[in-house]
Image (cartoon, rainbow, N blue to C red; front, side, top):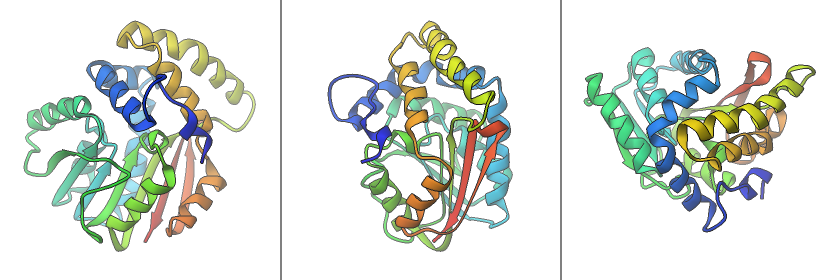
Length: 243
């Protein structure tokens, strides 16, 4: 068991149930807070990560923990695949995503469906690429989730993970700790009205395996040719691997 798997937003139920409840609760304010708390830098992280995948020209993409669909929408614009399926445990988040996709006239490319990432409903070797932005640290069982991502990916396909991380060096490491534990919970509570969610998010981020450790976990799941890169002093890390 990894440390982040023991960190929960609330006090009752399994982690997956609590995460579903949390994201349903904050769905209405998630996009606003996501961009505000990152000062908009997260948009650049998404672009860089998607462009790293773009060179492989995936036609069918599964976006795990798709949330409100930002990563799926940007992937559709920059990669221009034939199909993207956004999968998430939170119907509240996907409801927001469906409205965004409808407004952008992307319903012919992007669809959403509720999935338990530990037990995906798709057949083996179904997708050219599997992506996940800021979602895998919320998995109830990281190894099981990665195993499912590996299973549904075709041989030669690519996995792209973008995850928040903690800066490894002074002074950004110390500055970020203050921001994550003082500023983020206050702003999160004011806008989302859920104090637990924005205490849980930085705690889960700090506990999540990073860099070489995450590379080893991906290897254990069967992935090969693993490359990873830190963005903005280590606030975000991208992992790109193949099956």
